[in-house]
Image (tube, rainbow, N blue to C red; front, side, top):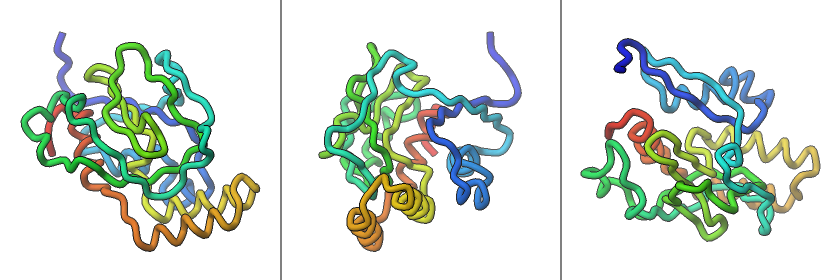
Length: 193
């Protein structure tokens, strides 16, 4: 059965909106839709984690991962609708904003790891052609990350020295947001944009 009309997408969120993001963007949902959405689409919000698919998620043994991190792409597992003939456009490693203490320890049965980093073994996975999990935050900008760092520092989740080092790193590091947007839109919409 083919459905005509609007295209619908589901967004899986695991974090509560910060006051900063609510005031500036209207919430994380809007940050995602602004980054990935197109006119005429409907986006629905769900709050679930990888473990809902049967994977295992736990605190990272190495502690917080905050800042801009290089993620290595496993191109042999990267083929999905919209990508097979345009894979050469994606570099072998991409920078992404990270802000998490938990990580995927085991992907759901049937899922494929498609990216990893020196800190996290599962940076990105796909589950068929309909679910794409990304550990980092392709939708975040540096302003959102700095606000999160300040929140974590103010509630004593991270130490001041760590926070300052991450902020200094942001002065010399930029995430590859355009490539991440291209990957996400290609996966979601089955086309290279």
